Image 1: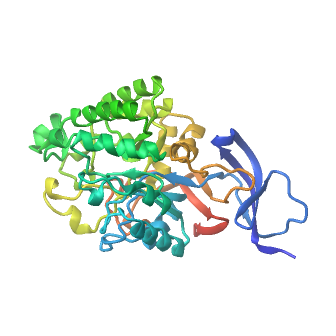
Image 2: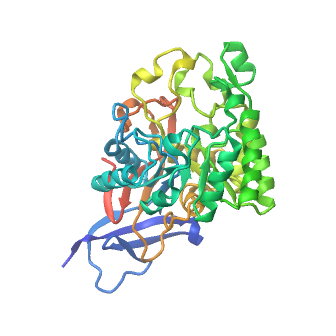
Length: 430
């Protein structure tokens, strides 16, 4: 008798970079877990068969930065709407920055977010705890209590700590208890009130600018503090080639430093803000073509270990003002995979490497057991058609935020099925 909880994924090209697998095979799922790969287990009778012929089967994607806007900013989006968008994008694990309202600086708020996501059952939501109380950069939060409540790391989100002594104390605290510190490297004094990369485009448009040094000075400082404290420092959303070079040197010196990059930084440059396109207002800003190419190179070499969406959904009004007055950020969950596949098409890196930067790469940075298809592991699986062309339009985005500069782009690669803990949470309508 068939079991509805048993699923067979048949004849797909399985790519699991963590286990160096790239082959056409079958996957057998039972009781939320991967029962076997390849040979059918004795007595296995599937309740559902998914034909993955000519499709790629890989681990569910792990996104290291996605703002879901709840609690406090539900006029932009909420955990329900955004975890559904994540499922449509093949993402099964979302790391959630703490700049909500209230800030995730107490176990109570962390527990609220985790339980809310568990009720939705679309994706796994793992919050970051605030490094300082209220993200004010003055009083350290109770990091151990946040870790016990389920926070996988601590961060001050987009409010960099101006006082270097306070940052040192925060990293010492985190290092003592084996907590990862996620830093957005930026010298807020050098940043001033800038909104665009300091270069010819911002000069021509008359926009207040952010020099590359705002990032590179902070990266150098933070790497020095990582060396001094022994804390694992993870840099969020690098944007400059010089920062990549400094990071690589730190890694060569065997320091505990890692980094990710937002996928839009791998495709867009300062030229894209021509015409004051507010959908290209992001933080950190889009930089030069040289910077973009250096980010691509660092990603291919593994200096940058993960690609994230840096998902920030906004209501339409947030982007309808003069460029400097608009809110920064892109809605990026549903374009994360196809924009990464575009890097493969452009010869930046092989397909296996690209999938690694979306699966085991981010999981390993955070010490998570996801992003791999081991027998007995949670059945978090993404199945996508690598040859399917589609055009990004507001109508085919299910995120509450449609603020993306990729509207009108024709992308290749579309998710057909997403499984989270053995349940089909997204299935493309034919």
